[in-house]
Length: 358
Image (cartoon, rainbow, N blue to C red; front, side, top):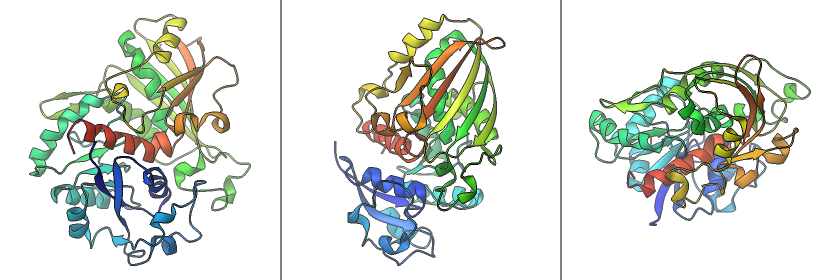
């Protein structure tokens, strides 16, 4: 595989930091440009994140003296100097949408961690182990944008990674209804206990916008391409409640599911333990050894014990059992800034490179 020169837009935030930790020794991707807001532009990366490095992995020294570009003012220079960019900016949605489209129109593909473009019908929201075929929408998007190389691809909301992967192998049984309660770590808000002491010994029963995303985005992930658009799968419905809990990393979901054709419990576990698809066989650098890991112990998965399984890129499942109102219930857990954010975006980029879209 050839080497790709990449940029990270929004490099100083928590997800941007996670991108750099992942990419520091990546076999395919070589970070050439770091960009942030005008407030940080002109500073070295080390200066910009001094006292603000929020993840447990130490800052890679190779980036300390890199001078930050302005993500907006230096756009032309950035787009010309890289093969594509990862984007994790903290801006208003309409500003993010405009920024990402501007990069794409400069023939610079954008792999986005942001939510602004997720529901645009011709923007693929790809989890390679779930819906790799959605990459086939990219030529339609390029036609709309008037580009030859440029496009936008996005990753889904981080909490979806706790339960949507587990549902993918079960779709053949006709999923009708899903109820999920998510318990989300503070890093999902870009925070640590040092910067958010109010979360110590505390639970907050509301996360702005999360419930709407949790109910809508799975339908797009399970959708199909028709007439140049990704049409959501309306054969099933989701309802969600999202709660912030005092955990550093790792989102958990308590999931209840009803089927048209109820499978046997052992059949579900077998499908989870043996799940593969086109993307899992490509040997992508960030692919976990096992995408879905089922634990038979009653007290697993746990965030502290299981969030770093397979480098934080696998989804941990457990407690599958019959339910009195739905057919089954189970618990899912995934690392929200690895599988759920930067790691998932890097994996998506690997897939798109391997398939020739970048």
